[in-house]
Length: 395
Ligand code: GDP
View 1 (tube, rainbow, N blue to C red):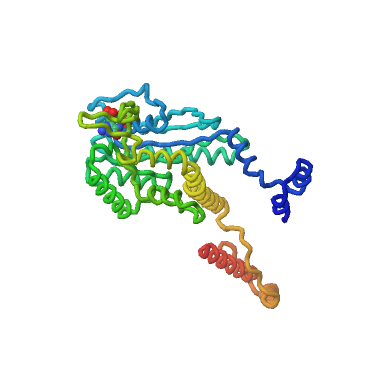
View 2: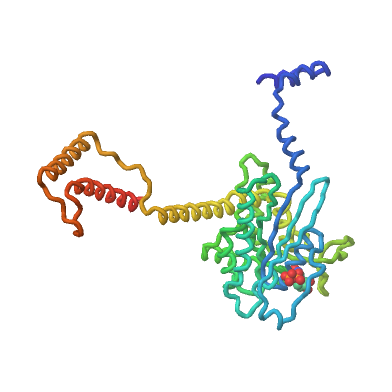
């Protein structure tokens, strides 16, 4: 349309503007409509935190969302933890920022990795993720699809201990059990326990092990080529920083005359939001500012889609099995013999039946042989069955 050019070419009076507005179809306002509708509806996001207890999960959640979700948490003694099973706890908060509402659900997994025997300790967590998919699948297939509550887990922050030499078997087990179901973002917990060179080494090692064990953690999407240089640089840094080394703190301390969220040690202050100290800001930006939507999209388009396809496949094969049980012969369109063959068979049938009528004897009753005149039909039925069997095997 040339109207855009005309609009620019002269200063428009209100009357002109009206005229020009008439010439626009108006679909350029579509993004505004979507924006208004989304803001009205609000957003939801479900974040799971997993890792052995004491790695700073609740402190980090508090630092990320500035909300204390763990006020009523009861800490278990060492004795209680030996036999503790993994629990799934859900906390939901409604947060509002500049009129935009976010329903944030944090799924905590206390007890994970705390027992003496941690074999399959991720099972309750995989079950939980599957149950949410199942619920969504049911709701989606039900009658009232308008108000479906989406409880699917959109992201899982997995805390890796800073004290080891890379991944422990329980870390590998957890990530392998969940990587096809949820977006895993691995984190190095309590990064203030390590000096920068140790963090670099540990990151390198974790990246190698993730590759070696074929674990698929959340992949940041490729940056669009038309993005500005600053954005591209940020994106590069984000990708290079993974797995993020994080520090959490619930306290505000004074550093260089400023009040900052940090940890006060006799030898200095570790600032949570200082990018030279840790990757907390990168994680927060990624999670909230830049990639929240992508995490939801990947959950829906990849993880849930896999689950759904698997379910449908299972349901279809069960249905086929059931129908085979009811009728062992499937109703399949059979290749019909051509006219020539049909004619030949009919002639043969008449010939045999005619012969039987003209003196040929049927088998005496009580023997296994069918009457002679029925033999051609039986032969044809046998051939038909043979063809059906062949079709079933080919399927
Ligand atoms: P959770 O059991 O994984 O939820 O761990 P908590 O958040 O309860 O933290 C356990 C202990 O570690 C508490 O004393 C925290 O103050 C401390 N802590 C939390 N985050 C950090 C951190 O980043 N660095 C250090 N050094 N300690 C931390």
